[in-house]
Length: 243
Image (spheres, rainbow, N blue to C red):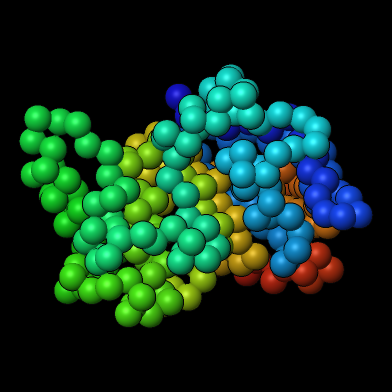
């Protein structure tokens, strides 16, 4: 299992203190994709960081498979792949190949061979062939995001937490990422994805959360979210072909 649950989570930050997240409850089950949508400043990124214990809730709790993450954050960190909104925050290797390899979990008798093979697979999956020896800082913004996504998948993880993963991606890269998320979900993985756009992922979503000014206006099946995905809440409406 790889279930993530939030129970009555609230977050207060700043000086003077300001309520950023206002009592959100959410359950993300294995083999599902949860899409958190909302305009800029709605609380999406803070919600993801709270799940990861990078921000501590002022009330409520986060659980992974029934265990309190705040008490033992390692239980979630060890099985989670993360892509932050700014990919440069998680790129550490001197080359593309080294950065992907750094994220790999090894330990088999043929660890070096297995690492190289898995690294090559991820580089190809995210369209970075030919750049293995390049320094990450020489890549375009979209290429760096793809590198960060490859690192997130390297673990291999049971949970993916992705903050605006479609930013700066061209259409072929978007399609590759959507296919990767579909395969990850179908293999039993748990995806929690935050975005201010819905078009690229809506057809795959199992659960939608609509955030507005720190509150979850809606949590549930995606078809019920459509009345909230409107300009009044800072969101582009869902087109008929997306629903």
